Amino acid sequence: LRLIDVPEAAAGIAGSPQLEVYQLSTADPESVEDALEALLGDDPTVNISADEDNGFIVAIARPPQQATIRATIEQIQKDSREVDVIRLANVDPQVAVLAINKLFGGTGDEPDPKAPRVDADVASRSLLVRGSKSQVEQIRALLRKLGEGDEDSAARTARSRERVRLL
Image 1 (spheres, one colour):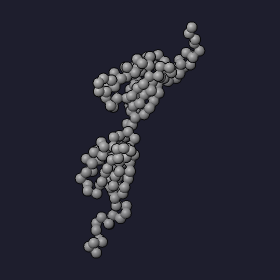
Image 2: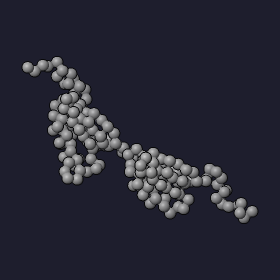
Image 3: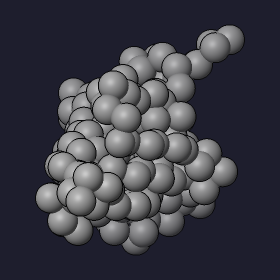
């Protein structure tokens, strides 16, 4: 009876440790593993490991700890990076790229790894932006201050330039 009647068994299957695999889209697996171990490291029933090659976190823990792990990973990845195309009507795309890179520190000997990635497409007068949602919004605000309107006015200006021939 002493061998069978243990407190951990009283919790049943629902309270037993479970294996969960979490896919990371933007966060670094090693830094997420460090954060989770700092948060749950004193609990001997929690085992966390990172697969850096595939971007996974593997966690063996009880359901309450799994909920904490899930919430922590969601919080870390909340401001994930996105890709956006911004059409320009008034500002030269190369000038816009220079201004954005200077604003976010994306140039120099050691560019900021958190800075958005911005490329100019001169032929279509647009910017290709990859950054967090807040960075994309800041870039749009900067372009408005530089004289750009909204997307509709950029599209109208681009269509009107299609009918002009320069000889």
